[in-house]
Amino acid sequence: MKNARQTAFEILCKIQKDSSYSNLTVDSFLTRSELVTAEAAFVSALVYGVLESSYTLDYQLAANLKQPLKKLKPQVLTILRLGAYQLLFMDKVPESAAVNESVKLSKANGCAFASGLINAVLRNVAKKGISLPDISDKILYYSVKYSFPEELVKFWIKSYGEDNAVGIMRSCAGRPPLIIRTNTLKTTTDELVQTLNNEGVDTVRAVADDSLELSKCGSVEKLRAFNNGLFHVQDAASQLCISALDPRPNETVLDLCAAPGGKSFTVAERMNNTGRIIACDIHNHRLELIKSGASRLGITNIEYIVNDASVYSNDIPLADKVLCDVPCSGLGIVRRKPEIRCKSLDTLKELPPIQRRILDTASRYVKLGGRLVYSTCALNPKENENVCKDFLSSHSDFRSVIPTDFCNGTFIRDGFVTLMPHINGTDGFFIAVFEREC
Image 1 (tube, rainbow, N blue to C red):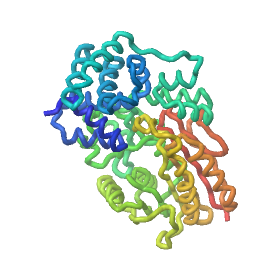
Image 2: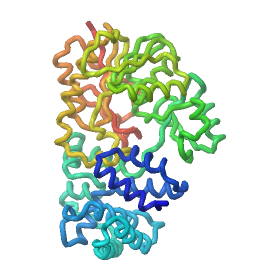
Image 3: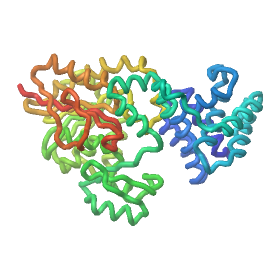
Image 4: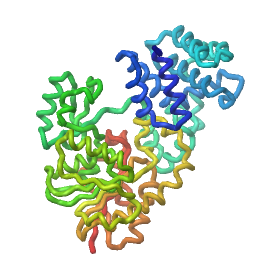
């Protein structure tokens, strides 16, 4: 049976090779493994820790190497990062174990030629500890301290100011909280708290109505409350997005980019399972995920349509409320998917035109007097304010509306809301609300 460090090594190599999402890759490996709970937790800590700290780790490693990091075999660099992370950030791992197990990894994975290098570099890292650049170079200093690429540090400072940029980066350290929404079709939040407490789960109220933060819960899917359909997992930012949409009983609501379904579920619960919800996605298998979740929750008012959100369809009726939670860079959920921080900003240039087409198309489904919400989980004005201002410049029949039910201090610019982890305690999230006037 593979041990925890070997499993973590293989996960990190796959993420790097295939540009796969960390959460999906970790879940896939651990589901197939025979690791006990403590070992599985160690694997998760190693993988997410290395991904979150890669820029900080590389700075320490580079200081102890005679050759550039880019000249190292990728597997060797991954082993060095794993070892350095244990030495610098995991106090309960003995230095000897971190070094010796890293050497063993090199020999077991075709990198025996580098075992001496790995041993020497890691022992030097352990001896020197963490070092940071001089703060006179703020961009480099923040990059190393918070483990973000310099181009993203610059971008966030330019976009949101230095204090907010630092707050965003600082909030991305460690695993994010697990937030759920009560299925108010089956229970109340007070009742759910008691039910979860009886299963040994600790709960505290989160910032959105009927939302809870869970701890000591293990695998959510194994909870009786989950299998009985008493809640679904959804960050508070997404729940606040639905508050801004303001769905009401017996209305027709269109969710154009619905998978995996959390927002449609919250809409259904707020509508008391009445009216008509039309959930769309371009892939049928993703609609099947929504159907499965709706069945577990006892939701019956959702219809499902395979549809390209950027292309108008005569098969979709006009709606009182339309939500387009568009595909985006994910720069607001780095704390959940730390590998996103490594994306080059140049690769994101293709997104705003797609997002604008979806918003234009979505506007055609809104009834007179109806409401349209555009949202992303991106902290990027080019995907957010710029898209929305461009939309308003060519749609005189729509006006923007600022939602009123957000926390004090929420970042509002140009009439649009940006939720930030360090201010709101949520994922980074953008919400624009429009109403059709004529």
